[in-house]
Length: 329
Image (cartoon, rainbow, N blue to C red; front, side, top):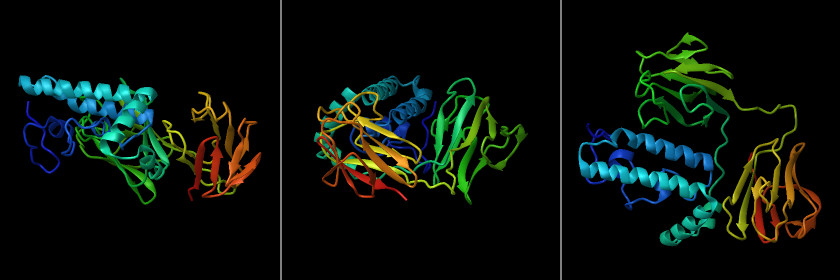
C-alpha cells in the first residue's frame, strides 16, 4: 500500500498523518474538530456536519489496515477523532460547551465570528441519489461557481463505493447558465435518461446513471417573475444570549416561527422569549413580522408593534435579543 501524493504531485513529509491522509494544511495537531472535518469555525448545520464526517471516514478507510503498526495506530486514532467530532458537533449541549472552550483557546468571540459571516449562497439546483446500494436520499447542493467531482476516490466531492466507477468518474460545472455533466474516465459508462453520454447539459428531472447509482438533477423551485416576491432574508443576532444558531436564512415562500420551544423553526432558548413569540413571513413583495401574543412583545427599531413590514437593516428586538434584518437582493 502506498501513500497518496498531494495535488501538487509531492508526497507530504512523514510524521503528519492529518496532512498525509486528509490533506489538511499544517497547523495545530491535533486539529480542532472543525478543522478535522474541513468545516468553517462554529458550523451549526447538522446535515453538513454528518456529511463532512462521512467524507473524512471514507478518505481514511483505505488505509486502516496499513502494514506499519505505528501508522496503523495513528490512522485508527484519527478515525476515532472523526467519530468524536460528529458526536460532539451534532449534540447541541456538547457543541455549546466545546464552542465556548474553543473560542477561549483561540481568543475569539464566537458570536462576533458568526455575526460577521455573510449568508451562504443559495443553491439553485441539486443532485439527489434516488437508487443505489446505499446513500439513497442524499442531496448534493449545486451552487454557481463550484465544481462537483464524482467518483470512487475519497478526495472527490461525492464519493461512491463502487468498482464500476472511475476514481474521477465525472464532474459537474456551471456553464453559460446551465449545469454541464462531463465524463472524465470514458471507459466506464455514464447514462443520462438511458443514453450514453460524454457531455450533457442537464435539465430538470434528468436521470443520471453511473456505477450502479441513479441521480436525479433537480432545479429548485423558481418563483414566477409575474408574482411579487420578497428577496431572501437573513436574521442575525447582534446582541443577546448565546444560542446554537445565531443566524436564520430563508427564501421567499418560507415562514419562520420564532420562539423558545422545540416546535419553533428558529429556537431562541431564553425565558424572555415566549414559546411561540412571533412569525416572520412573506406578504406579497415584502416580509412582515407578527407578534403571536408574546409576553414581552416585539419591537422594531425601538417601537413596539403587533404586525409590521420589515425593511433592510431593521433591528428586531425579542426579549434580550437584538436581531438585524438583512434582505438579500
